[in-house]
Image (tube, rainbow over all chains, first blue to last red; front, top):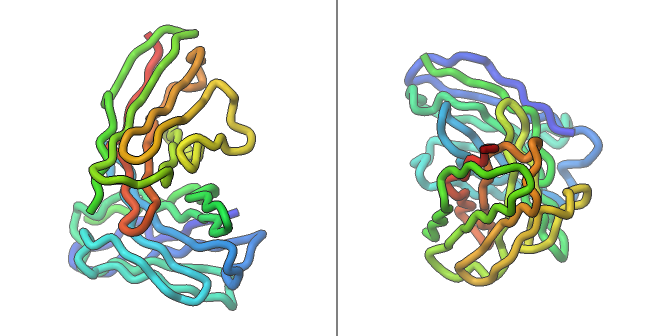
Length: 119
Length: 107
């Protein structure tokens, strides 16, 4: 299971930080990697980035280097930090798992999502 | 970057109807295409991966097809619980990209 936690509201120009707590699976396993996705009000799904068991990351270039995803294997959590936020970053932020095996199964398990409002 | 174009953006069909949603990639993505169902206030749910493999537990009325640049999601015999927005996702590399979504309603 995945469970997001976040601040609820962030001031413009500040940093948004959300965390995904993972239970029932280890972030140290190379069989999975972990993602952040968001959905702004009335809009579609937007991929933010991935983090792998070894700490390697991929990001959506549209976020212009504002995003950082990190692992905390001691807590079995991974986090998203988004700097210099604007109202356009208001969204429900989801974390999700991908099975990275012989056949990849993308985003097979999702957290419930956490709404972050920038105002 | 490879773009995905989903069509239609919305549709309304009768109960029991056959519904087809298309997803077109701007470049060849082989079969690295998945489909998701997203109901309001709920968590997106994976339906199909590798273009045509149904995820465990997904009803057999959902089927996917295609290869390369053109893909389809078909719902045979539309049910009330199928009302949702459906998204395609390409995952052949980064960036991952979702289609714009297709909102499915009952007529």
